[in-house]
Image (cartoon, rainbow over all chains, first blue to last red; front, side, top):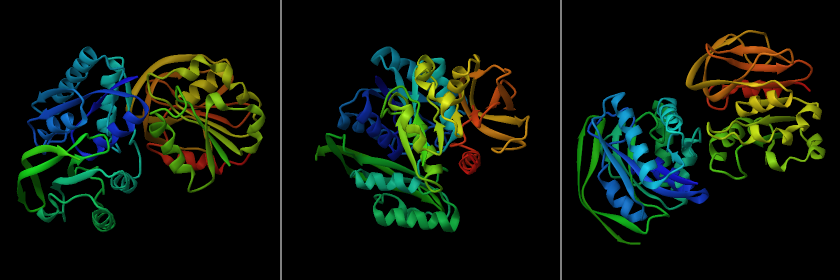
Length: 226
Length: 182
């Protein structure tokens, strides 16, 4: 079965890609570039890095720009999946949805309308276990966005490590934060993963943060041998 | 020991993570369980299990519905069975009750119609199905949504079918099934 992976460049879509590639043939990445920083559906920080990630993976990309308005972005997603079906003859779509019924059911509807399979390999999985899987499988993941109290700019650019996971789990107990950022508390960017043929090296970055919201922006990066 | 039957189109498929693993994560803290794909079920080995749960599948996957002959053991097993989504559709076909087209995706309001040990009252549940089942003399209707039947019980045995996904929302339904007496 040929699959297209909805790919934001963050930890969930990259792990979903990894699991999909173990079972089926991943034919392309499908990326929505949202102009809306508060997109309901699509991750935004460092979305441009997906171009480098696709090169690192050796996979073609279907990239569609969306204004990021609540229901219009679903039409844009449908357009992107339709293009992936047409260009890469995919039979199904893979998402990195973990908890969000809102996100998962909208993709399910689009896949059903377009008559392709829909897979959510991280669905309902324990969030701490998912983070631990990333470390175990040697994913290099940095925190590229924080959007909840008491997270602050000190978190930005930090790599997901066992220590960071422990700290996130503590914050879950104290403040109800979802450790894997399911409530939009954190966003991440993957710099290296088992399927990457090259890893991403950041040569210039900056931080924009105010109170408990902020982003770690990758301004310049390149692929380097692993 | 509870048996969870993987109803997905092939053994060790990508759908295993989505439709079987979440069921295991609800059952395992309460009771030991084992997973077998529906192609691998040996009716003579089923006496080792105290209960059986049939998983759901993704919308495009209708493999079990095309291989109903692989499920004749449902008639003779004799202990509680819970079929979720494709599991309910399969149970229905095994006993000769046809399916009816009913597409629902997302959260749906469920209304309980008959008192039962698994759930009560009105509640919201996660649904993902292309088909429901027709009402019949063979099954009691336990619950419905605005569009179609959502839960049934085979009248003569503790064989339940629920169309909504309790492993996603309403995990208590699965826990209540685990507590059922033989």
